[in-house]
Length: 427
Image (tube, rainbow, N blue to C red; front, top):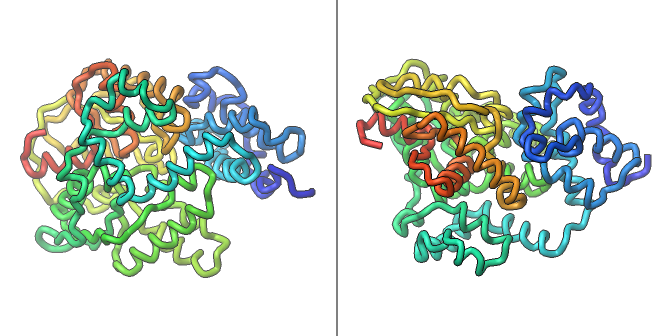
């Protein structure tokens, strides 16, 4: 078969064959829930992939749009009774889109800005300085109307930051409290490092309280998740190699991650670099060490640090790339159950994405906003004091929607709640 726009999907045809088009994925898919179109569902997209591979359709703008409406949340994988692995299908298809489809100039420039900024904390900090100067004004309707439509989601989603927090870096070494149980490398991330430095500090404190020496190399870079999920595999591979080499030098027993999207990508480094003879085995060894911080804390065994009571109603939001992509659901809930006084309440539509999904809330803001509003409404319906999740993108998305709906609940990362319980500090 001659090369064409979809020819790179040929090796994935066995994955397509596993889809029996039963429709179990439809009610789980957020884009189908919003749009109600078969073409914007997982099985519809798989049908389009096969049609493209068989040269029955071309890489037209309309076809590309149906792939763009996918959030990559992997809820379809959880729902699928046939075990279809959708992640490699959509990732390879998006790579084919970026290689063979020319997006409009404005879209290309916008994506270039995103990918030349988001993976680089120093650049993000430079852009964040004006945000703390103008403060909440940037979210006012009159101010947003002055900006190009493409930039409005960036300003409305960005959190309030204090000048003193932007330049603060996590210590490279945090010693274990008491006898050391494990030496852990901590991935500090990009968005997390810039806007949620307190989450990284809380992660280091919690791990240290549980007997871990924590190594957070200052010169670590992006994990490549954003590039991988947006169809830029070569960029993702370059980031992956650098991160692997950084933590090889740190010589750690495990690599902890507190951002669900990053964790799902890092656990797949072995697959990502499988065809690179110099890196395949190193990538596989690295991936085997990667643990979400909740996994690692449960893996360590019975808690060593005492938990102080927190009298609060908590709604736990499953980050898609933690629950669906990594299958990590029980561990965060087990950690919450260890906190005395906490009441964890079930949330309606818990399996539905909040709309963050990497850069989806920036490239598809209308759909993302609708999903965010839907998620905030469902969370508020159980009247929580605190919403807890495990991903910076989810925190930003839920905070933004909650502000719009004027809800008063706090949105925290899981480790911030654990840190408060261990230290006895008020939330």
